Each structure stands twice: as C-alpha cells, then as structure tokens.
Length: 194
Image 1 (cartoon, one colour):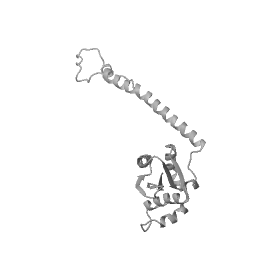
Image 2 (cartoon, rainbow, N blue to C red):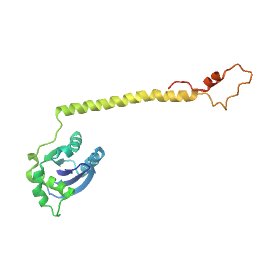
Image 3 (cartoon, rainbow, N blue to C red):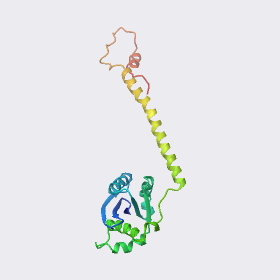
C-alpha cells in the first residue's frame, strides 16, 4: 500500500508518496489547487500503484475541494489532525519547515498511528444527490445550447446566400425609370431573418 500525504494550501498542494511497508519515500509532487491540478495529482498517484490511501491534513477550509475531487474519483481519503504531525515533522532529516516536509509528515503520522485510527472523508447523501442533479442540469443546458445554435447557424448561412449583391455590381436603373429612391434602397437591404 502507498500512503500519499497532502499538505493543502490555497493555491497549491504538496504531495508525498510513502511506501506503507518500508516507509521509503517514493516521490513528491506539487500540484495547483484547481480541478486540473487535482487530476494531475490523481494521475501521478495511480502511476505509483493501485492500492492508495490519501492522508490529508484536516484543514477543510483549504482541503475541501481536493477531498471532494478524490472521493468523487473513488479514492480512499483519510483526515489527519494537524497536531499529530509535530513528531513526524521533527523526525524528518531536513531542518526547518516546508510544504514537502509537511506532506511527508502527514503520511508518516498516519502510518505511525495506523490507518484505521483516522476518520474517512465521504460525501453525505444530500451532497451526492445535489452532485447528480447538477451533472444532469449541465448536460441539459449543453444540449439546449446545441439545439439553439444549430438553427441559428443555418439561418446565418441562408441569409448570406439570399443577400443581394453590392449596389456597384448590379445594373443601374435608367434615368426615366419609375422606381423611387426608397424602392431601390429597399432592394439593397438584406432580408431580415436574424
């Protein structure tokens, strides 16, 4: 099993993958705190192995979107209380504090205390229902937009072919013609379809 510690922030998340059996650091990564970054982190983690547990520092005001993305993808996400990381951080060989050190400390705190001891992140029933309804609405709005745009483009194509040619290209009316200036102006205007 691989435990991936995540130190979450407003703009970026630091990830550190630790082998649960050996405690060896398998890799580190920094991702952006948006949907594309979450997908990149998930892809990276799945390249490392199949059995993964995500250990995320329990700071829900910054980790909530990342947790939700992982849970929606079917990942096992566990919350680690920030106070548990102190001993793990002190055990790191590098002095000081950095996001990568914190990500490693989160993963190691989970391994030290046992995965079963930590609460799992989950979507409650209402959240799942709202997500399904929102997804369905997005599909309906996209389909409606396509249905509206198709006839509009057809009208644009039709009106282009029905428009009269420029006045210079058409023949001029003779001087003794009974056509009024208003009639000739009306002929030059395009048809009013749009």
